[in-house]
Amino acid sequence: MTRESYINAGLTFLLVLVPFWAWSTGQAYILTLCTKVAILALAGVGLNIALGLGGLVSFGHAAFFGIGGYAMGILASHAQTFDPIMDWPILIEGTKSMPVIWLVAVVASSLAALLIGALSLRTSGVYFIMITLAFGQMLYYFTIGWPAYGGEDGLSIYVRNSFPGLNTLVPVQFLILSYVVLGLALLFSARLARAPFGLALTAARQNADRVETVGIAPYRLRLVAFVISGSITGLAGALFADLNRFISPTMFSWHTSGEIMIFVILGGVGRLYGPVAGAALFILLEHLLGGVSEYWKIFLGALLLAVVLFARGGLIGTLAGREVAHG
Amino acid sequence: MAEPLLQTRGITKSFGALTASDAISLDLRPGEIHALIGPNGAGKSTLIKQIAGNMKPDSGTVHFLGQDVTALDTVARARLGLGRTFQISALAMDFTVLQNAVLGALGARGGVMRFFRPVMKDRALLERAHEALECVGLQDHAAMRTAELSHGQRRQLEVAVALTLKPKAFLMDEPMAGLGAGGSKRLTGFLDGLRAEAPILLVEHDMDAVFALADRISVLVYGQVIATGTADEIRANPDVRRAYLGEEDAA
Image 1 (cartoon, rainbow over the protein chains, first blue to last red):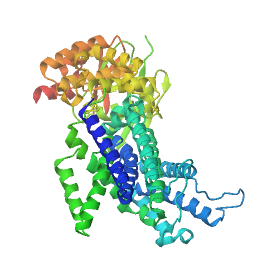
Image 2 (cartoon, rainbow over the protein chains, first blue to last red):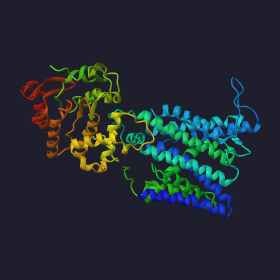
Image 3 (cartoon, chains in turn brown, purple):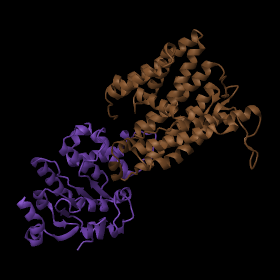
Image 4 (cartoon, chains in turn red, purple):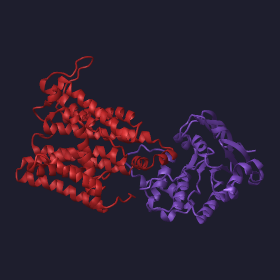
């Protein structure tokens, strides 16, 4: 085992220990915080595939996060008013079932990622950042002006959606559900990084000429990575909406894109557990410093600056040392 | 005479008033090393890009393995079996040496859209990668990070990655660039043996290497091929002496 995998194991242990302690002492608020960490980490795991493996600095992942959230909001709001989404040519009704909502969220966000990626991946560098940002902002303003689902005010869902065999209203059950989804995403992401696709994608990040010269088209690799990345972030959006039982255009705003990117950078770009460490640190700081000052993000900003200047590998990178090439 | 593997027919490329490639017709025959020389700014890089597929000629065609590949991009030409090495090493520097070679083997085999099985445990790919590394003498450095290789070793690795593709022809852009005398000599010896695998179109500044290796030499000046012939013919050619070798002697 490498040092990094010990650190990952330790982090996993902590992330299980804290909610266990909170559960046994009956602190529901801490459980909710842990759930939030898991869901935001999931969004980061998505971005980390594009940003960490592919080197694609997407500043528009809020688009997918928001699409996932609105997939949940639209389906659940129609279900709670018993008003079908459409009745012609085929009847489509809302649903309160999480698996169905997740499926819709994943499909919708991957389609959006396919479209956005197909256009924006023709550019690179600063233009890519700007185009992805523009797509995110487009959806943000669109939802603000979309009265059917609350417009600027957003939309509340009164009862959390259901999952077969679970009572999702019990905080610890929803927490376990979120942890399992995050765990599966991490597992998938770990395998992806070591698979042929991961090798070619990380090679394209380092040197696109090299990849072309061995007969692999970098554009296709990046597009597929972008779609996988967007769909995982979309799934996180659906879960996040369910955690808050609320959706609003804020999910689409560039602040959200920035925050997802902050999780990845704080934790360690391209590190498997980077987004987990980053999201945990972010929520921890919000929880600890948010009580001290309303302006806690000043400290976050200073920390981010320190990471970018002095600890490029983020939290995981600093603890684990330089990435060892995986054999 | 053997059918040429790679051929350009009347390739022309202009940038504004500058004609970088002026009706260039070249060919590469099986088993030979064909060197392309010319002073700086003669249009060697432009020509290489058009042969590799980075750049489309304004007119003229490129033929590879008897097929018109003018419309194909670099990826498609690489798949057909055009093994290219770059003037400035194009390698994944954070990878190990072995990973770079496996990447080549992966490109050659296909199946890059696989998401679950660890690529570094794929027997067939590893075998091909090790074989290529052994061929260039890098087998003992397989686990080393590519960024830690010396300049010469990187050149060798470039050739090894090209070898994993089992190319039908090599396109090498100044492989000797930046090598010391010793390294240059070693690589010359290696390329000498390589022509048995596949013919090489070699762009090179190192005249010792060119005259030692090349079966034929073409001289490019101001976008035009002013002469093609054996080393002796080129040495004796008065146009070449005036346009190129003479200038260099004077310098």
